[in-house]
Length: 368
Ligand code: NAD
Ligand code: DAU
Image 1 (cartoon, rainbow, N blue to C red):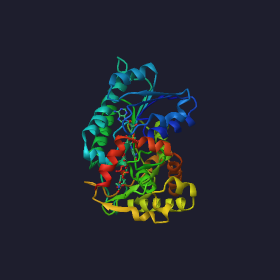
Image 2: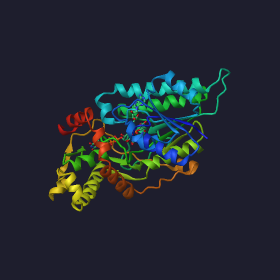
Image 3: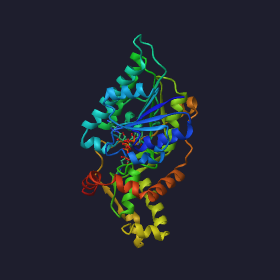
Image 4: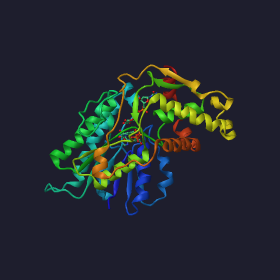
């Protein structure tokens, strides 16, 4: 049974993955390594922290000797690498951290894995390095193009996606040159509990509740392929258990939506919820629905994201055939679960929105 080092385990997908894994693998241990950037929240792991099988280590993936020591001391045979700078808009404002964390950080992790798992004589102990990557490495699709698949040519367009593409190449090279047993998943847009409210869906939910403008970039016709986060966790689990070293697997939701459709769905769902619930009206007096007004009036078309990719879509055929991957959440129920989670977890989001993040949000969104 594997014992996992999960990097970035205090971020959105990391938290969901840790919970997913511990629920399903009773004999496994998980060590989370996270440097707790603005996007990491140690308390999100509180509900599982009592579990004696989980350990949290506050540290940086760029600290090669720390990672090597963790792998050796805790006798860990598997790395699930999620730690990254993950927000495209931030990568446009300041690419440096994306190169440091996503490229240099991934390389540091690969070096540590090799140092801990390869013996002097060149033989390897049992191990797996799983790299969690994105569909954005493939660039942008036209409206009628076939979906991305494992053979699609890399064509990253933002500093974020370029840094992820570089990390994918490093992972591949460590397999090809040194024999490190790697698998990579390239996944589409995730949504669900614990997502930091800078990303489209949670940002819109919280702005709706607070009666703030809903900034839709460009004409709102960009398309993303949305996947409930648990289905991404399933894809990662299957790649770890059944994936072939050296292979990559595209994971997606088969659920393409324009941004404006997403925003309108959220407006409509929350309109009904707030109008029909006195407690919500009292909690969120600034929400237009609390005053009997339409939430859709908050939609504001703003300057487009520079280099904004038009469309992402994933063909998950290989994962389905080779791993038995099939997403199980349908979009309407996943969407509803997500809205419910944000309504029920105000202490979480009010905490993560404190301080520097709130300032960043206000200068970057309200002034456009
Ligand atoms: P996130 O921004 O919510 O979390 C990233 C986590 O990494 C945070 O906890 C942060 O503290 C940690 N971290 C950052 N730099 C670190 C460092 N140097 N050392 C240790 N920890 C560090 O990101 P997410 O949305 O959970 O994404 C996780 C991974 O999945 C990323 O690699 C991302 O590229 C990939 N991915 C995300 C999506 C998506 O839709 N969110 C889709 C496909 C792939
Ligand atoms: O495709 C996978 C990727 O999905 C991941 O690799 C990234 O880590 C993740 O952040 C996400 O990238 P996107 O850029 O697609 O996600 P974001 O939520 O930032 O934006 C989704 C779409 O919504 C995109 O077309 C831009 C648009 N958008 C976003 C924000 C934050 C808006 O119109 N307004 C906004 O305020």
